[in-house]
Length: 338
Image (cartoon, rainbow, N blue to C red):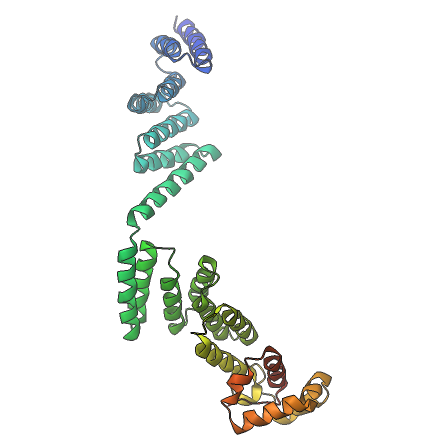
């Protein structure tokens, strides 16, 4: 008799499935109810019933039905895949009820029973939605500005960790403002946290490609990495975006610092510090490009001016061709800029 009931239950369940596919939900429920009355150990009947309730937007009933399926399933040692399915349906219903914390918990429980790509994706989507909502709720430009100003005050006090904390708070409050990223990068550089500084400098440029200070920060990062040529190249980009010239002095100072570091005779920490001036000059004499620059009357006059007035170098470096020639002489070790 029991076997007959189980077979009849399967038949009723199949009729319910057919009605479900036709979106005849009330009829489907009727068949599932009859199937469950014939076999109250087959929890797939309940999970199918829950699917109908979900489509009818009866989410609380859907959850209750799934919980019943799990309870019965545990007692009869049902297939863990069915338990996982019931837990996923509970998660789906919680999402519809806008109960994201509960949904995440249900999806996580489902994955411990049986890991499927579908449930994993639902978990990730729900976690992403939750983070977006938390972020939106935290967004406040006024409080962001206040945190940034507090960070600036701490920066002036040379309290780099405290300033970083405030700049981070400012970013959380308004992650589209480039200023706290730039300021935090400066703090990271003070602490020699080069990787973090680089991330913030790149984020500045990504958010606003015309933000001059982002390039200045990136150039400082490259300098800290001893990538002096890259630092100079980035500073040239900064010059292109510095339309009003407000940062011209700072850019020139950083550029000269990089040039000095590249010059082995200037004691700037370049890679060739151990090369003697005599060896450098000998190699330079064999370099046609270096000889061309040294024989150029205009360059001779410029070099003479730079010897007499070191400040003249800043003016000459504004000319890209002259800057390129000076850089080549520095690299060759025949020129030192004090």
